[in-house]
Image (cartoon, rainbow, N blue to C red; front, side, top):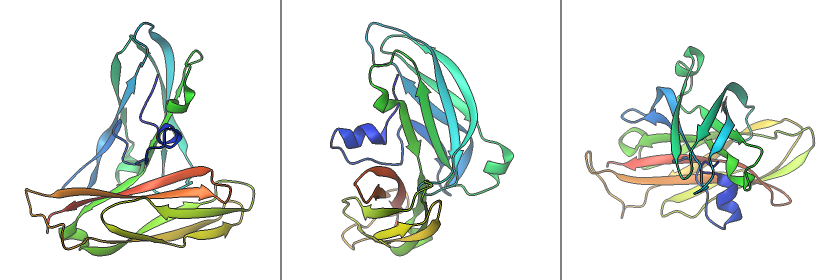
Length: 225
């Protein structure tokens, strides 16, 4: 059983994205939550069914290291080389709150041979340049989800936009939370228009001082100016 997994992308040397292609939560114009999240789960085995797999659906506030809350668990069976699309309704509290709600999926199946792709998250924000401008800041909550003091390093993954994050390194007390500022500038060479937008994304990756990835967040941008 599998879902797009940031951990698997990193393990395979691929840049991860927290706009998860297997988790759909938002519509555009404006960027807003749907009433339910659509989650795609795959059975990568060509010969064996995945019987009675548990799919755990968590939500969290937007940010890195934020506290997750288990909302529901579904039991599914997926045939060989098949996929299923699951719908998870969002409650009124979430729908009337921040449209940048994080969604996290954990799949539990005892005979799965590759558990690294059993976990995937979506933590993203989005806007058009006619809304945000072409030079702007994004406030990203960052929390040390640990009872230990530890250093957290933030970096912007390679992109053709100009992105910087502040702070880049900070020592956090246990469960301390701060606001990091992601500054984005759209170079003049990228120019779109309504109806012919240019889609881009900027991802912030968080690691411990030892280099262990602890999370990330992606800002989606549709360049329409």
